[in-house]
Image (cartoon, rainbow, N blue to C red; front, side):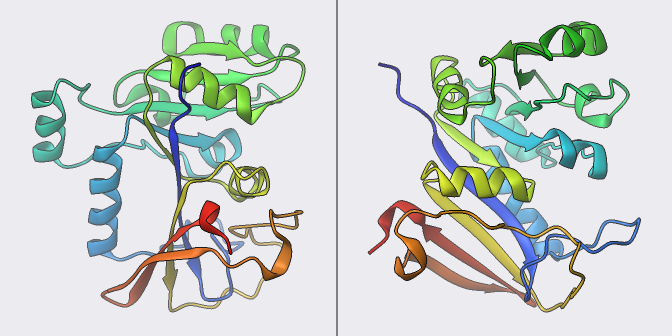
Length: 226
């Protein structure tokens, strides 16, 4: 059986746990040094995944920005950019978004009911795969493993982070906490309500705690709960 990728969840939040506020502009939670750290992590993985909602809301290019890091990937026999992956159950994607027109190869996971819609929308912009009648994260990870993805970086959104944590599929979490308070009930949060493995008393293993300017990076191993 092909090994599933090592799954790394990456997020930046306010002190009160929000990924963004309710304004039309993206809330910048990280600083320049931390953005560079994220770029370094991106350069180290085989694939980067975001949900379709995050793609529509933030319209990211999702690239490795450093030319030096991209050149190092190529010298190591890798593609210049990691594979870019998204998931959608509705099939509501926009072919004009930046995600499709920058970087290297793209892959979409969807469900049987939406696969034709996605293929018509995207044409040859991405490879499109259905994982069945419902979105199954185990099948997504199995397929990524078959495609040679050894390390997967997941950059959101909160629904995807919640699902992967609740299903005990995350191997590592990089959580950056910014010295901000959002306090808006309807703003998106890093994690939502779920039956997490081990319940509320299961403590994750802390791998690292590091100040990066005015933010703090916390690295956790969710499967190392005690």
